[in-house]
Each structure stands twice: as structure tokens, then as C-alpha cells.
Amino acid sequence: MNYSPCILIPIYNHKDTIRNMVERLAPQQLPIFIVDDGSDDATQKVLSELAADYPIIHLFRLAQNGGKGAAVMRGMREAYHAGFSHALQIDADGQHDTHDVQQFIACGVNNPQAVICGKPSYDASVPKGRLYGRYITHFWVRIETLSSAIGDSMCGFRLYPLASTCDLINSVKLPERMDFDIEILVRLAWRGLIFKNIATKVIYPPDGLSHFNMLRDNIRITKMHTRLFFGMLLRLPLLLWRKLPRQKKTQSNHWSHLSERGSSLGLRIIFTCYRLLGEHAARLLLYPVVGYFFLTGKKARAASIDYLQKINLKSGQSTIQANWRGSFQQMMAFAQSGLDKLSAWMGGFDNGRVAFPDREEFNQLLSSGQGALLIASHLGSVEMTRALATSKQRAVVNAVVYTEHAHKFNQTLKQANAEFGVNLIQVSHFGPDTAIMFQEKIDRGEFIVIVGDRTPPAENGRVSQVEFLGESAPFAQGPWILASLLECPVYLFFCLRDKHDYRIHFESFAERIELPRRDRQARLQAYIQQYALRLEAYCLLAPYQWFNFYDFWRQDAASNNKV
Image 1 (cartoon, rainbow, N blue to C red):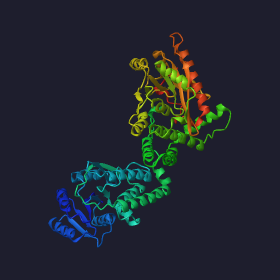
Image 2 (image 1 turned 90 degrees about the vertical axis):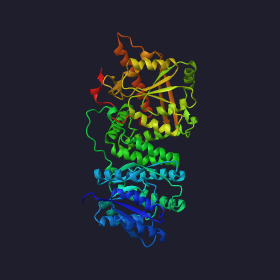
Image 3 (image 1 turned 120 degrees about the horizontal axis):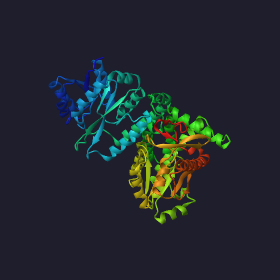
Image 4 (image 1 turned 90 degrees about the horizontal axis):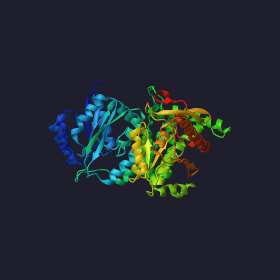
């Protein structure tokens, strides 16, 4: 069928706004299907006059008010029967900007199989209660579709592909009231349709007529979300199968080239759930979210199982489940760690739940006014430690990150607490300029936190091969070279979860890192091996809490110079 769009307007007693709407739409020269949903005599009179004045209008009437959904579905069927391929739904109350019609039509030309949804941009006229209600619905729609593709599921400005939409409404009983706009999008998503979103201005006229009933319609929407949630569970295998990654092979397996597959979406879903429903609900939500990434993350799953097998071999025991179950447990530990960080920043994690046996040594370091380099790792929760260390503003913490990936979680933390106080410093390699910047911070008595168990992404990022969990593994030289240049104390820093609480391990590594020119490489090798052995010991203590989900031992060496 050729691309042939029309405009669809459901109306119920909007006699004061419909003429202006038609006058603004008429220049588009598109047929206008108006479905009168049992309006009063005054509105019927206006509609009859408009139909006489504008030949492009196709007017249909329902004998009695059936609801917005009933009117839209009647209009879709009529338009499809008349040979139109697409219907641009727009409400009759004058809220939507008709200047955006051409954007919707043009987007439909380029995406004929997609649903084009309006994503509202509101001014000060929007009622706050309606706005907050939309946020709740957006959250549930993302759960029900396992996607953030639908930018706004309640906006009444959208372009439907009629063939697939009419097939849906003819085969499934859809609600006919205000819950229609939401459910039809969710069900179209279940059928595999793609969605495009167009930003559009939406206003709430002071004298506007709204048929939304806060009590009745919110009850309807609540029941609808309950029904759709269980419908999602029934379709879960299919929805997850559709999301299996079809990625092209990359030239490098280096960890910095691996994208954080949808993790920002998972974080946003959990963050929204935490704010709306509380910590317990957010923890329950971890299971389906982690389940999705577990099922679709073949490489991460394989790397996890390989690591757990090395743990068993090194310990000489088989207490760790080095299989799918153990891998899922490790990924759940990672998700729980993230939620704990979020809880700490929002004030839901009491400092009393964090044991710090070496606090006195840490306090002495703070009191001395001397800066220090803290070598951490991806074992446990470094971010949790930062949150607690800076909660009383006793220390200035500068966290070194290698890529932009690390910013995603910290952006979520900033949404939770505007006083997020950790300075993130992104580096690709360590050079003289980096050393000078860090030296200034150390001289001011600040702390620099850097992980020692990831190699830098830059081509000049040198590594040393040392033994870790029974096999040779690459560890970055950069942190130790930086420490020698800064001439400051170096500490190891771990924060491990113990059931429901955390325990900070803070130990002195060296008063100074010395790398004399004569035996520089040998000293480097010794320092890095010493760090790897301490990391190994803590991994054996908390095996599920090491969060490097890639092949740590056999990374692509093309971007690293080994010694």
C-alpha cells in the first residue's frame, strides 16, 4: 500500500476548540476524519457546519459516548477501509502544536512501519499532578515493554501505521476510555513494532475542557498496568529473545571497547522504582533486570564462569558454583552493589552498617593533611566507600576513570543527591601533564583513587604480566608510575559486602613507590605482583564481588605494550 496519511480527531463536547483546530490543520491538505463520541447538540451543530465548510472532513458519529479509545478505533477502521495507510491522531482540545504535523508525516515517510509518538515539552501551564502521574506510567510502560523506546505513552499526538494497528484492534479487546492510549502502544510493542519519538510543545489552556477523571481514570490505569505487567511476564521469553544482541565483531576485545549494554536503562528503571516505590521494591526489580542482561550477555556470562573456575582451582575447593547459577549470583551481587550505592547517596544506608576496623589509621592520615594515592579495584564497592568518606566532607576525593562509561552511574547518583562530591577525572594515559595536575591535588592534602585491575585504553598504556589466580594476567603500570612521581603514601582500599553490611579494608601498601632507573622494570613487576596477590586474597574472601565481566586474562594485546 502506498503511503497515504490522514488526520484523525476524536471529539467529545469540544465545541469551543474544534473549529480553530480544523482551521489550523486545513492548510496541510490532508483528509480529516472526525469521530464524534456522542457529543451534545451544540457540538454536533458545530461539527455539521465544519463538514459543510471543509470537504476534506469525514464526519462519523457514535450514538452514545463510548470513550476516547472507542472513537479512535472507529476512526482507524474507517480510514483504513477508505484506503489510507496511516492516521495521525491529534486531540480536539487544542493542546497540541499543529505546526508539528509535517514532522510526523515526514517521519512516517522514512519509517512507514513505525509508530511515531509525540514526546511532550510542557510549559508552566501543566498541572503538577498530571505530570507526576505521567512519570509513574512511563516507568511501568518501560517495565511492560522491557524498553525505553516509547518516549511518552500518554500523549494524544501520534501517527499510527493502520495495517498493523487495525490488525491489533480487530484481534484484541482494548480498553475504550483514557487507558486506551497507553495499552495500544504497549501491545504494539509486544507485536514488535518500532517507535520513533518527536518532541512537541504541549500546553494546558486555562479554559480547556478535560475529560480526565482523576479517581476513575487513575483506577482504570492502575488496573491496566497490573494486567499488562502479567501479560509481560507471559511474553517474557519472546521479549528477551528479541533483545538478543546482533552485534558486529570488533577488532579489539579490550574492555574499554565493550559497551555497557543498556546498563544506563537498567539504572534508570531501578532508580525510578527506588524513588517511587522504595528500596524493597527496587531490590525485587533487580531480578528481572539482571535476568535480562544475564541471558543476553553471552561473553560476560562466559567470563564470569571462567573467573569462578579459577577461584575454585586457586582455593583447592569447589565451594563456588562455577556455572550459570554462580554467574547469575555474581551479576546479582553487582546489581545489589549498585543499589547500595544509590541507597547510601539518598540517605537510606546508615553509616553504622559499614564496619571500618582501620578507621583510626585513616583518621590519622586525614589529620596529617597529607595527600595519598589509594589503589582500589573492581572488587566490592569503591563508590560506596567514596560516598561514606565524603559524607562529612572530611576528605576531598578525586576518582580517576579511564572511559566515559564510568560517568553513567555517577550521573544517576547526582540525580539522587545534588551534593555528590566526588571529582571524576577522565584520563586515557598517564603523562607529564597528568602527573602535574595530580601533584597539585596531593600537595593540597587531597586523595586520588585509582583502580589497579584495569589496563588503560590508550595505545601507550603499558602493562606487566603477573600471576593472578593461577594464571598470567595483564595489570596496568600506570598507577605505580604515577605513585612514584607523586612521592606520596600508597594505600590499598577495598569495601566488601558481608550479608547486609559492608566492611572497609584499608591497608598501607608503601610509604613511597621507588622506581630507580637501574632496575625500574623489576621494581614495577614486584609492586604489581604484590598488588595482584592482595587482590587475589580479597577475591578469595569475597569471590562473587569481583566485577570485571570480560576475559581479564586474555585481553586483546594489540593496544598494550607488554613487558
